[in-house]
Image (cartoon, rainbow, N blue to C red; front, side):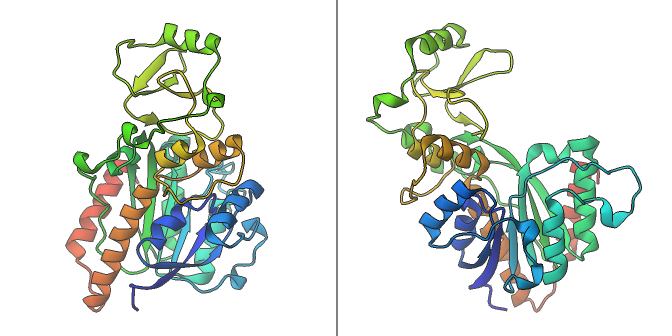
Length: 333
């Protein structure tokens, strides 16, 4: 197959961050699915198509053929782990099951999934073990690693697990971090003139400054409120969160990030259209991905697939076996 042009599906698509990453390496999206109506509005404005709705109601047979499945699936509790109700039931009631059933039906050459770092620790690691076993039982060679967006060019500490799988024993390695000299800084993404509506009330400002851990921290900085109530400044953003209060992250403790700054923190292009309210963009960026991380993973996946094809389907077994052992050591699988 010619991996210079490939087809992918974008499941749990959100505002389209994963799609941007794989379009950047020559991919063509042939199907997308998203449940949230507001996210669909943003997606349609930027990609010219409205995602199909609830994936649980979509027959996998009706999805066009594709080469790579992509999905930033929500992680729900595995309610029946340990009840010994059978392998087929271990993922029932969770949205991972939707990915599994589509992979089982369509059998694409590869997939890439993204989730919160805590997936590896959920239920003492059992959740991740079961997910990995289910993917391997479908015949996939599975690679997994926690990647930090801060290492790939955006000013945001956002650690997420990326799970990559191949039907063939492809020699794949996760991307190396970007050199610090090539990373976007907080100063690079901040707007110079900001409307007064983004500035906090004096009472909030006074409260934040009073609790600020380092009152001499150099500007610009972004601070966030810890569980203990103290305010910690950094030269980068902590992970954007969909459900945090409007004042969770403040720039120099005086104002909220603008919509465009939130998008920049996730590495979205300047051309990305904003068609919903501030609160909705905040939720969507909090649920989204750091685009440069996905781009880096996509490049490595395509490079590995092309090399595998050029070799006539012969993998470097020594390298893939080493990575398998490395994953097992990291996650106790």
